[in-house]
Image 1: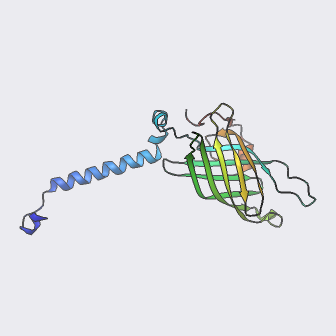
Image 2: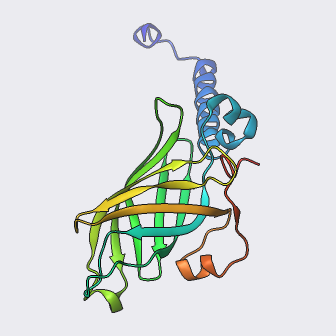
Length: 196
């Protein structure tokens, strides 16, 4: 600033250094956000589970049918997208799709990892007379032993709730429950699936 007041020009060297430093910082942050955090050696130190991919399992709902009988288990697929700072969860059943409004992956004081999300459920047009659009929240824990997947519970603004169990995982993305359940590209859940 004093150089400008005195009528002297600014040296280009500091500007170049700042530009290079800023560019390197931006590249480093982008690489971390998208890729570096996933590396097994990095997650060894951070402890963050890699759960991105598609999960396959069942929903057990408290919702009752018109005749008062219990609803049978509902096959469901859950697609999880994950970066270093964000996570989203999209749940598919044969009749609807639930889109994330807010999601969070957090570590509980007991050391377990928990994925929670709030969602809007949009039933297919053909079933809307018996299943209207609604909102809800879900919470699942990430398994830490072989065979454990994502397990937890949910509730909706329709005053229904239930349990969710996802026991199979695939690195692939599926657009609906039918294609996920028709695929043979799933494996049994294992601790911090996707880590290899």
